[in-house]
Amino acid sequence: MPRGDFFKTIKETKELVSELAKKTEESLQSLLNRIESLEKKQDNLINLTSATSPNFPLSTFAQPTNIPIPMEYREIVNQTLNRHFGIVVEPETAYPGFKFTIEVPKEYSSLPLDEFDFRNGDKRTKVINYAEGVFKIKEFCDRIYNTFASEMKAKIIQERI
Image (cartoon, rainbow, N blue to C red; front, side):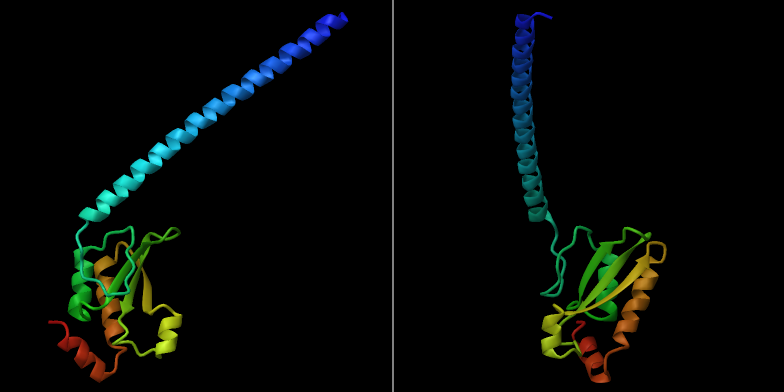
């Protein structure tokens, strides 16, 4: 291969690499623009759905989840305990069920105040199989109710109304 052809090949290779780099940069910029557009659409959708979601009574320290809480669950908690108790439902990834958490309000909790604050509340959790659903939730709420002292049970019953 003559020396001139060799340098011509190097020059062509550099031009090809440069052109390829430019096209890659343009493609990446286009992709970033599309991602930003999708993120804006997602934010708008989240804002729209949160503005139209019904507000169910939860305790003041209950955190919202991505899973809607079935009204049956809320009714069981209201009837067994009362409406001041919070509910959190989280899906299990390795088990065909969900974590059901009852958040005991500060006024009913037997935890010392500093421990209540350290733990971010009095939370009682049970993993429930989807097939057992409502029956296990009722059983779990009954078990929680029976852990309270008789004076506290009377207060819980009195505030059901």
